[in-house]
Length: 107
Image (cartoon, rainbow, N blue to C red; front, top):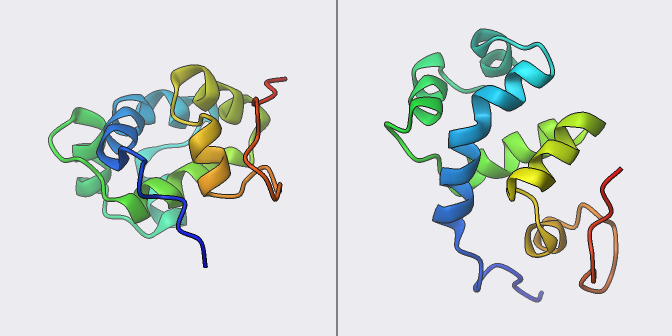
């Protein structure tokens, strides 16, 4: 199985998502408690991610990105924020393509 992750700066993406997590939550009118319940995180951890006191791990990043990816507006915000780019879209196979995409389409 081909590994698509070796060149990704995972810490950069995780930090970027943490800094923008509150904005994404507000986009879908969701409290910290509700997001924690849906994703299985503690409220303390989520609060720490949002305040920059703790950088989330890669699996948390993937879970949160996939959760917000389902909402068109949140997905577009993540693209504009740089949380989702061509490398992330390809690595997570969220464009359902076999080859690396040449560009992301934002609605």
